Image (cartoon, rainbow, N blue to C red):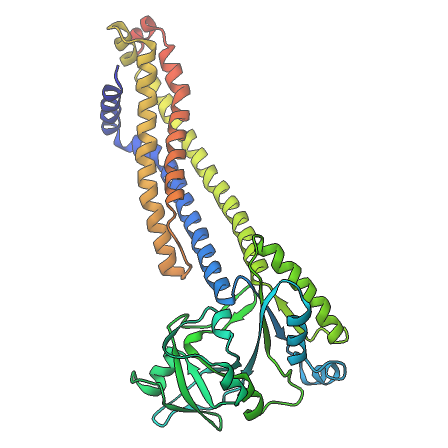
Amino acid sequence: MSFQDALATALANLSAHKMRSVLAMLGVLFGVGAVIAMLSIGAGAEQEALTLIQRLGVRNILIRARSFDESQLQEVRRSSVGLAQRDLDAIAASVPGVEAVAPKIAIEAWSVRSELAATQASVYGVDQRHLELQDLRLSAGRFLDALDLRDHAQVCVIGPRVQRELFAWTPALGGEIKVNEVWLTVIGVLEGGAAEADTFQGITLAAADDAIYLPVSTALRKFDRSALDSPLSEIIVRVSDSREPARASLLVAAAVRRLLGQLHAGVEDYELVVPQALLDQSRQTQRIFNAVMGSIAGISLLVGGIGIMNIMLASVLERTREIGVRRAVGASKRDIRIQFVVESFSISVLGGAAGIATGIALAFGIAAYAGWPTAISPTAIVLSAVVSMGVGVASGVYPAVQASELDPIKSLRYE
């Protein structure tokens, strides 16, 4: 018996017993659907984590001033002034593996307006290296330069949402905006990026769309800050390019921590954020998630395979006389085995195809309903299809052997 003949016979038998065939397919359908849906959720979460890490900068180390309540802050300031320019200079001068260092100051902006409108925005004092270190891009104008910092220039670069709110889609370059009591001239507009702030592993990521960047020297000189506040809100350290970025980042972070411990008299009024380490941790968590969810889905496929085997064993008993007739007219044991294996294989393939469609629909449904990121993985689809076919073949082997070993004479007499 050729494969084509066995396939035609198998499809005819499945069509003749539709309900039984559907019930046999359900286990494979749910198993394959669960595999694709779970792996799609995992792939989506990994992509989102990578996107958020890229916003922090994979090669960056962020040193952020810690927040304290007023009584704690007064006690801390007796020993340490907080993050300051001396920390930045010391890191640049004495920590090996550092490519660049840049400061950042968060300004409390209680008023942001132009001559025509007002809005809310996050305002930061930065230097000319911030554009590269944070992977920002300009859609118009230029970014801050060394002369702006030297002259304490009252200039700024704004995000696209700030441009829309304050200038109503008109060109913003050369326009004036007022932050608190300081007027600033717009010299650049950023490209659109993240529309909203996000949180990853407890770290808040600001949205560039809502940001206003001005020279850090201007921020220090012309904006009021509490005397107890840390002079700098953040120091961004770029690690030199390396073949082992994770190891390089951890080594530089350890060196920075030791140096700051000396400069701050052992007071930890800062925190270190290593995006590469966060990414590795996120990937490890995702691998565990995929393993657990894959195991659960695998159990569903196993149950589906057992269901197919049960149906096929029942089919062997039901078709005992048919098997006897086939053997009597010349069919070999091999022909009988092929017939039942192909039938089992057909059930798993049809169930797997339905499961793939179900899994994709589940992934999109979860994304729409729960707001979870999902990404359909071709690898997951191929893996599920291969596994489902393997389950079908494995589940059909034993019933096929049982059918082929039936005695033709006894089978013809079976009622």
